[in-house]
Length: 42
Image (cartoon, rainbow, N blue to C red; front, side, top):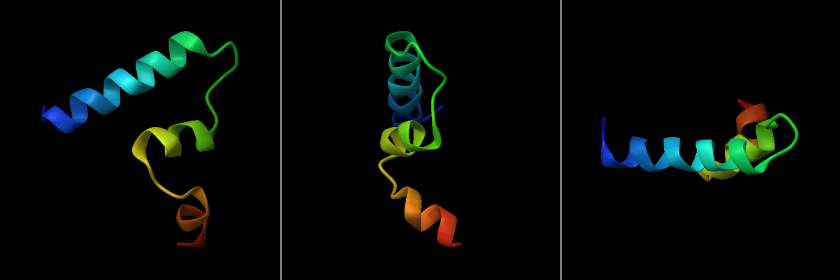
């Protein structure tokens, strides 16, 4: 596992532990620092 993967995993786990609600696509996109609109366009 790369360093990058590890930090992304940690950020997702942190989001999961802090969030009362299920994660949305926007939450996950924020972790990966991608634009959700870009994803939907492809």
